[in-house]
Image 1: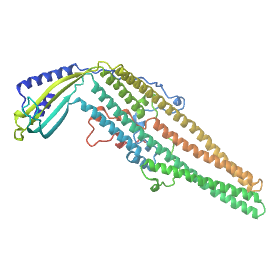
Image 2: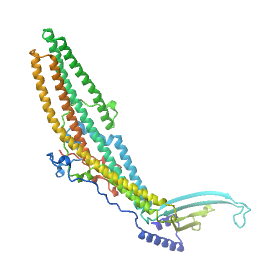
Image 3: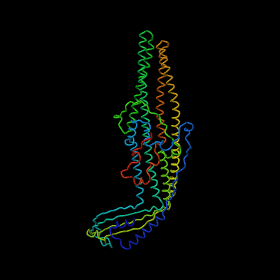
Image 4: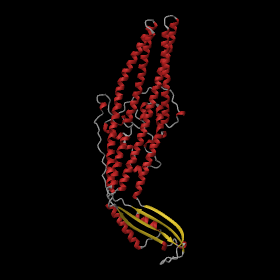
Length: 517
């Protein structure tokens, strides 16, 4: 490679003496490459605390993940079988600005790899120029004294630093790992945005369900006001009964109106998540009817391969480990091979002739004898950064297990709470029906009916709230399990260096496969 650069730079055939010299340099370079070694520790993934099973699955009756047909897929939101949600989720990958920013960071990291890889090859520069100058007559022993001369020149320089100690190799290794971490970070952002959208969507549908409940309740309360007014006209009710019925009605109407604020805010949040201005976005009112899904959790050890944030933290350890090698290489001397060649003449007609050529080539060796602990401090810093990344990796793993356990527990407890709350709703409705009959027969005052109405409505609202919380916990569990992602989707080192033609985006831009029904 170096000799090829020399022949092209010189622009003319190299004289026999220079051929021998260039061969000697080539032999020296080959010997240097054969003797090259990569200093610094080779990466070994540290162990992370991993339980044998999830605590919340023990004795719960839920089955762990079975073969692949029960595992999450890329389009995990399809398990809820909601076409409107499906359409919104598909927009997140292409229109969400946070995802776009994460994708740009990945491309930047991939470009950094190319920058470090370029150091494996010679650096070739060129120059050319023309000048006209007159020298002083009062210069002794100079044939050009007092003359005005032209100077035409064109030339090129080539320098190459063999990677004797692995500094460049370690830099490329770290840059590749950092690019992979960036790709995993993009997946984390995408999963977070998709999970946030699903959570907001089900919260909005829960509000629609609550509005539907309040609509039905308001109609019942209006009938109660009319009934009480008729009873007052008939002399079998009091003004207090009418006032209580009207108060109950107006209070519920105010409660329904207040839900509009929450719904509007959620609608605006969904618009922003899908990359749209809130002013031009709206969702029709559709009451919540989805069923909370308990995603297959699998064995805990698989979580290390299914979470993009864990993959990112693990790749960052590779990067910081490589920097120890870079810092270690600084203790050894650098060998630089250089060659310069070109054409120069004072007469334009002779500029491109063979006698106008010039060249030089030779190696140089440079190292640091004394820096008063500077390189040692840099190596200690690199080691400390690696230790920090190990701690962050293990903390990320612990947080991941905690999130899975939290949401498994939430789904288990909320399932029992929902059953108890449904029974409470049924009991409150029976009680209200009984008291309504007794009031119509004149056996009780309307105050007893108001208390029963309030109890029934509160229980129904609580049931809707539990349903919303169950959906949120279901989405959070899928997110905690990685949303069907795994480390096999990370770009390999070769794919980072040589991406497929037209592929300037990582996995978020790829159409996700359908989820298992």
